[in-house]
Image 1 (cartoon, rainbow, N blue to C red):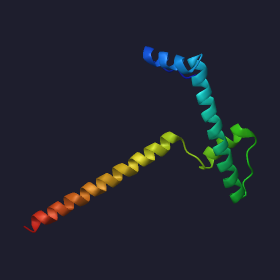
Image 2 (image 1 turned 90 degrees about the vertical axis):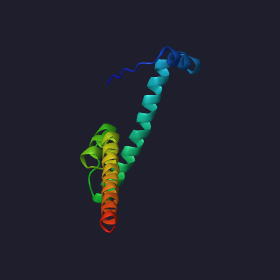
Image 3 (image 1 turned 120 degrees about the vertical axis):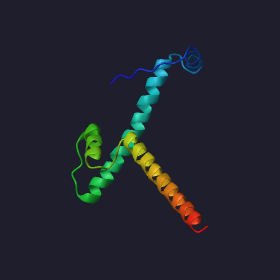
Amino acid sequence: MDYTITLSDAQVKAMEYIAREPIDWIENAAVARAYVATREIVQKNAEHCNANGIAIAVGEAGQIDQAYELGVIRTARIVAEEQEAAIAASQAAAEAEAAAAAAAASASE
Protein backbone atom coordinates (compact mmCIF):
# COMPACT_ATOMS: atom_id res chain seq x y z
CA MET A 1 0.00 0.00 0.00
CA ASP A 2 1.29 3.43 -0.85
CA TYR A 3 0.85 6.51 1.32
CA THR A 4 1.59 10.09 0.36
CA ILE A 5 2.59 12.81 2.77
CA THR A 6 3.31 16.47 2.21
CA LEU A 7 6.10 18.28 4.02
CA SER A 8 6.74 21.99 4.03
CA ASP A 9 10.08 23.26 2.74
CA ALA A 10 11.20 23.78 6.33
CA GLN A 11 10.21 20.23 7.26
CA VAL A 12 12.13 18.83 4.27
CA LYS A 13 15.21 20.81 5.28
CA ALA A 14 14.87 19.54 8.85
CA MET A 15 14.57 15.96 7.61
CA GLU A 16 17.60 16.43 5.37
CA TYR A 17 19.52 17.45 8.48
CA ILE A 18 18.90 14.04 10.08
CA ALA A 19 18.66 11.76 7.06
CA ARG A 20 20.54 11.40 3.83
CA GLU A 21 17.22 10.74 2.08
CA PRO A 22 14.10 11.76 4.04
CA ILE A 23 11.96 9.16 2.23
CA ASP A 24 14.27 6.40 3.48
CA TRP A 25 13.87 7.62 7.06
CA ILE A 26 10.08 7.86 6.70
CA GLU A 27 9.79 4.38 5.18
CA ASN A 28 12.08 2.91 7.83
CA ALA A 29 10.03 4.49 10.63
CA ALA A 30 6.78 3.04 9.26
CA VAL A 31 8.26 -0.40 8.61
CA ALA A 32 9.88 -0.53 12.06
CA ARG A 33 6.65 0.47 13.80
CA ALA A 34 4.68 -2.10 11.81
CA TYR A 35 7.23 -4.74 12.87
CA VAL A 36 6.69 -3.88 16.55
CA ALA A 37 2.90 -3.96 16.11
CA THR A 38 3.15 -7.33 14.33
CA ARG A 39 5.11 -8.81 17.23
CA GLU A 40 2.51 -7.51 19.71
CA ILE A 41 -0.42 -8.84 17.66
CA VAL A 42 1.13 -12.27 17.10
CA GLN A 43 1.81 -12.59 20.84
CA LYS A 44 -1.72 -11.51 21.84
CA ASN A 45 -3.26 -13.81 19.25
CA ALA A 46 -1.16 -16.79 20.39
CA GLU A 47 -2.07 -16.17 24.04
CA HIS A 48 -5.78 -15.93 23.17
CA CYS A 49 -5.74 -19.00 20.96
CA ASN A 50 -3.79 -21.09 23.46
CA ALA A 51 -6.09 -20.05 26.30
CA ASN A 52 -9.19 -20.93 24.28
CA GLY A 53 -8.05 -24.05 22.43
CA ILE A 54 -8.10 -22.37 19.02
CA ALA A 55 -5.71 -23.39 16.26
CA ILE A 56 -3.34 -20.55 15.46
CA ALA A 57 -3.46 -19.34 11.86
CA VAL A 58 -0.45 -19.91 9.63
CA GLY A 59 1.98 -17.04 9.05
CA GLU A 60 2.10 -13.52 10.43
CA ALA A 61 -0.48 -12.14 8.00
CA GLY A 62 -2.83 -14.99 8.84
CA GLN A 63 -2.37 -14.43 12.56
CA ILE A 64 -3.03 -10.70 12.21
CA ASP A 65 -6.23 -11.44 10.28
CA GLN A 66 -7.20 -14.03 12.89
CA ALA A 67 -6.61 -11.59 15.74
CA TYR A 68 -9.01 -9.11 14.12
CA GLU A 69 -11.57 -11.81 13.33
CA LEU A 70 -11.53 -13.15 16.89
CA GLY A 71 -11.75 -9.66 18.41
CA VAL A 72 -8.36 -10.02 20.06
CA ILE A 73 -7.40 -6.63 18.61
CA ARG A 74 -9.23 -3.65 17.13
CA THR A 75 -7.98 -0.85 14.96
CA ALA A 76 -6.65 2.24 16.72
CA ARG A 77 -9.44 4.20 15.03
CA ILE A 78 -12.13 2.02 16.59
CA VAL A 79 -10.46 2.18 20.01
CA ALA A 80 -10.24 5.98 19.79
CA GLU A 81 -13.89 6.27 18.70
CA GLU A 82 -14.96 4.06 21.61
CA GLN A 83 -12.95 6.17 24.04
CA GLU A 84 -14.40 9.39 22.62
CA ALA A 85 -17.93 7.99 22.90
CA ALA A 86 -17.31 6.96 26.51
CA ILE A 87 -15.96 10.41 27.36
CA ALA A 88 -18.92 12.08 25.66
CA ALA A 89 -21.36 9.85 27.55
CA SER A 90 -19.58 10.59 30.83
CA GLN A 91 -19.68 14.32 30.14
CA ALA A 92 -23.36 14.16 29.19
CA ALA A 93 -24.14 12.28 32.40
CA ALA A 94 -22.20 14.81 34.46
CA GLU A 95 -24.01 17.69 32.75
CA ALA A 96 -27.39 16.02 33.33
CA GLU A 97 -26.50 15.45 36.97
CA ALA A 98 -25.43 19.08 37.35
CA ALA A 99 -28.63 20.28 35.67
CA ALA A 100 -30.73 18.07 37.94
CA ALA A 101 -28.90 19.37 41.00
CA ALA A 102 -29.40 22.96 39.84
CA ALA A 103 -33.09 22.32 39.23
CA ALA A 104 -33.48 20.73 42.67
CA ALA A 105 -31.70 23.65 44.30
CA SER A 106 -33.84 26.12 42.40
CA ALA A 107 -37.04 24.29 43.37
CA SER A 108 -36.10 24.34 47.05
CA GLU A 109 -35.65 28.12 47.08
